[in-house]
Every structure is written in C-alpha cells, then in structure tokens.
Length: 165
Image (cartoon, rainbow, N blue to C red):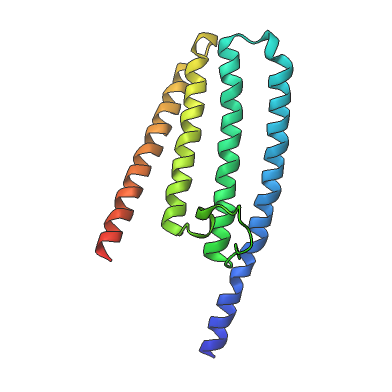
C-alpha cells in the first residue's frame, strides 16, 4: 500500500507540466507585446526627445527581463519538479538550464524581480518632469528596497544552509 501511495505521489508531479506549457504560451503573449512596443518605439522615434527614447528602450528591456524570468521558471521549474530534460545533442544548450537547483531558482527569480523593479523605478524617475505622483514614487522606492533586502536575506540564508550541510 505504501509503495502504491508513493508511486501515485511521484507520478502526480506531471500535474505541473501544463503549468509550464501555459508559461510558454504566456511567453508568446509577451513576445507579441514586445513586438507591439518595438513597433511603436520605431515608428514614433522621430518625434521622441532623449527622455522618450530612454523610456522606450527601458520598456523593451523590462519586457526582455520578464521574458528571461519566464524562461528561467520554465526550464528550472520543469527540471526541478517534473522531469529531467535531455540536453545531449544540443551544442547550443545553455549550461545553466540543467544545473539550477531550487535555491538557485529562488535567487535568479528574485534577482530578475529586483532588476524589473529597478527599471520601473528608473522609468518613474525619468517621468518626474511629467507629473509622476510623488506618493507613487515613494511606494516604488519602498517596494524596490523590500525586494533588494529580500534578495540579500535569501542569499544569506541560503549561504547559511550550505555551511550547515
């Protein structure tokens, strides 16, 4: 009976596979949004001043970071929770894709979130002359600091747990 329950629990990991397929579909939606943003950026570039140009580029970087974050979650999540991915025969396969453990996944996720938060904060600072609400800016700073501190605490606790093993 115990083996049957354990086998059922082990097989249940495949319930996560549709989540990762859904994230691939979400990545395609993000690609569509990136394309729309890029089209808008390129077609309106002649009217942009320096600030608008920088803000447009930051928007593209923000979408790129978000896409990278989704890729990290798809690959390392699938590898850690569903099944190993066979990278043999793929000479261009990035080294990290089969080597990110759960602690590494958490750190990469938080680092990506901090980067995305920093871009949102930078965009708000660049819009100060356009009437960005100071209360909103204050909250963006607070949220960014919380993300940074969370990243430091996460890295510190992971390092402590590595030393104890």
